[in-house]
Image (tube, rainbow, N blue to C red; front, side, top):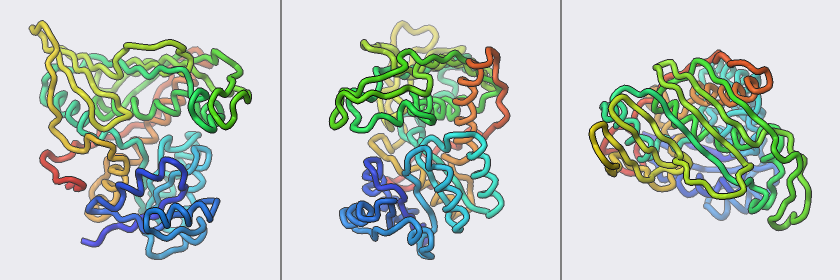
Length: 366
């Protein structure tokens, strides 16, 4: 079966791993790239042996079936809409969009045109989260009762060369890192029915201590410490903490899932692999569980490749737009609940993504 030909829009740092992995998959091949800076696109294309061009040229290219959108978050929705209008399937980096309204517009246009739309994160397709899902499905911790998720740190101005956008609309710890954690929780426990939360801006101004902008000030526009609660339709209650305001260290686990028959320690959802531990009822210690699935190294792009396979076969893809929108709505819901002093009832739902088949050969999806 002929590979789905993909073009990348946005040739910044994150594009490297998509170029490296993209054409290794059996269903997808990266054939071109584009950027607002055409010379950067051409240089990146030359580096990876693909054609570099303008965004307009790429969208008009009849050879390109699918766009991988790696632009900045504020441009995600507009580029998605342009790709769909051009008749291309589109897969976008997280978050799916900045605002719920523009994300809905993307979903509606894709449905109208009969095109696929998907979104990162795809780390839940890695061996760590896939094995965790399998353990839950097979009853290793009994009936899930609750879950916790923690992502805390001191902020990106210490190391990132251009950290301003992390503190502007569409940024903050929830929109930057929340997609990894909430997507993993939904993949394990299913969709949410309501959320609530409290959020604050702890430091209204930040000072950049990285190069080349050392000493410059950032005005903070978004909450940087968010604590949320999630009610899942299947019954469990989850809690999540995301923060850029923690100046010291932390020993909290990334994710734990609690069940009637034990506790599951889930690896970092920002990675594909990691160590899984389980403490079953009646035991006196943790047991380490080997990964049952592949994609345990940096497999970014597997979500796009899974979408390409779905385009080929007509099945549903796993990192799909409905899942991404549900996660986006929940992230906004935490902020809305904090501002309004109430619970936020989720308007959307989604299916829990199907597990990958066991025993897949490398860079295959079916």
